Length: 381
Image 1 (cartoon, rainbow, N blue to C red):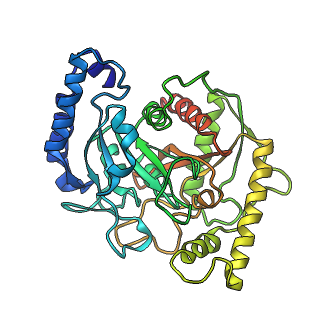
Image 2 (cartoon, rainbow, N blue to C red; image 1 turned 90 degrees about the vertical axis):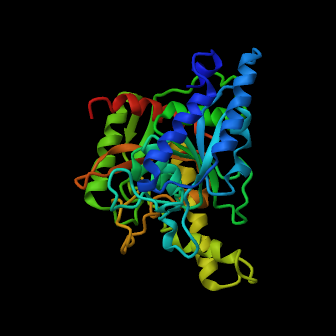
């Protein structure tokens, strides 16, 4: 799309009008957008067309309509706008007091999963994932404090990247949240990454072979058999994409359950007490240090860690039940590692599941390379 706009084969105004028309036609049932900025989007698209008509060819994402997470999402979309993207609206996020941040509330009501309207798309980047999966926009921004990009990407059957924590500025005082993006294609997430990092020249391509270990539960999670089986099959297909699966080791690598440490760190920013002021908090943070050491040891001998993105299937709008949807994702918000969710397959309920791929700090390029190769390996599956 961007190439067509830069070369004059497609007007940015027409690309944006196409997205706005799809939103008008579909979003009353989907609930993916909290606000739609029609006039502002058309004004921005006309500016891009004027730049192209004047011979400007430097906008790598010229005319690409995007959704931005939440009503304040423009604050973190500056690099994408500079690259030529056109924000068409604010995507739905959970309302105040929504349990577990797994829902979204759009202008027309709750956000539904495009695969099954009786299921949640996941959250908290709920509207971004639903909008991309349903084809309303090709790219949307997200933020991930416990799995808020990766979980909805998995449950909507798309690609979702969480950057290394601290790589970009964040308003989250805990340091748990990192920005990210959701798209249907790995190449589009890579385009997002280039825009965010200013990598006009991406340098030599990163490719395999990559060594990887697969864990269905990280040693503590209650993973459903079907979610585990779909992720394991997706991991096996990566062999054709230059990923070499290694045994977990003896004894197998296992992490401490990150829930107490994550919750303690979150609580510490809302309390006048210091982070280490209670025995339970101290114990939780010691467990975090244990996990940091174990992950450092793992990435010293392997390039990648593979897991199911979630231990469970997309749940209904009444809630997740007893399983933490974040069980396999929030360890990497604590540790800061970059991670990506890629489609793993379709469950017996007709809904997608994801395969989570985690890399060492700063190794987003390896994740993007694996996601692109995985896309090729999924042909026929």
